[in-house]
Amino acid sequence: MSYYDIDSILTDAEKIPCTFQLDVPDLGYLDNTPTQPLKSGTKVGLPLWLAEMLAIANTGDVEGKSFVSFDLPRALGNDVLQALKADPRAVPLRDQSAHFYALATRMMELSEEQELPAVLRRTFVTRASEIALHARKVGGVGHSKGKGAAEEGSNLGIGGAGDEFLRGLDEWERNLFRKAHDGAKAGKEWMEGVKKH
Amino acid sequence: MPMYGDLGNKLVQHAKRTQNLAHLPAYQTELVRAVTREVRDLDRDTKNLLEPFQGSFDPSADQATACTLLVNHLAMRRNKRCLLAYHRTRTDKLEELVWNGVDVLDLAGQQAGGANGAGVADGGAGGSSSLSPQEEDYFRQYGDLLAAYKGQWTDIDLTGSLEPPRDLFIDVRVLKDAGEIQTEYGAINLTKNSQFYVRQGDVDRLIAQGYLMKLG
Image (tube, rainbow over all chains, first blue to last red):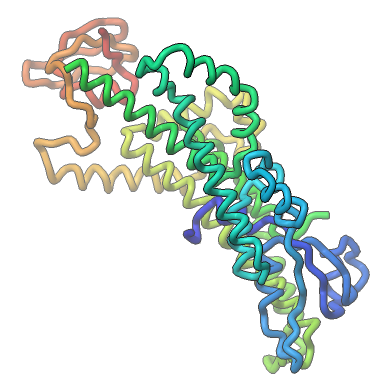
């Protein structure tokens, strides 16, 4: 993850629900009321680049409390986790966040949520194999090997559901899909080149 | 309600789109200016906030001010990152174009062609080029640098095609007047719509630049 990485910068813009732990007169604009002071206990959605530092910065307070406390964003909330536990393939991650995994990884560094890592790992593994499957089909490799109409038929059969699954991929998964697809295609082209010469 | 960093984010979204495009979209002069203005405003706010303390600010004694200062600082840092990443994405693209043998004049022409359509909607500088003046400089100087580097080897073309040629000689059609070129077999005058049977190595660059079209 580089300083210049565009996806990492966009992940940093994801909003996190935060609660201010002190009154700040000058920050009313964060709660859409620029003329009023921001009261302790106010809930605002702050981008990760702001929320992270405000949550971990040392305020110099004797009790060691920070400027804000935060919750997990809705994309990683209980509803989504329950759905992922039921069937990872049925959840369009992109609707939750275009940078779902990147956001989750960042949040795991900040939060002590116990269940999250295991659920996410299983989600990725299950979906990755599904992605690989789709990537090969689009490349048409199965068809070129001439395995017959049966396999081709099954491609057509799940075409609609497959499109929907691919639409729900987050940015990281999309990259994975693209790489798998390009790899299969390049492999196929190379094999055909070998035959010709 | 707009928030600090929103404009910077817009810039990065432009960069994201740029990554997936073959050409370089118009430079976001206005947006870049707005983001730098935001940084300047934040810096001024910070100075004003610190002024009454005369250089002896104690964060634990005035947490509300400390929090505001931190927010300002983070917003400035965020904007800096957005600006740098936007420009870096574009210079990466420019370097790629130089390696592909694209001419800076071609880039300008390409933009002029699309100017009455998408170019204007993009909200660019309104000039004929999709590059900022600084980017044009960068493009030219990087081109010079590459030419100097390539000049060290006379018997190999570093920017040549990686595909091994099937034939040494190929048929080409001239798409744009390209003047006279020198080859091992004498001079050829490339006038529009004429056809030639030439050595591929002699005309690779002209094909890449769109002067010639390979036939067959």
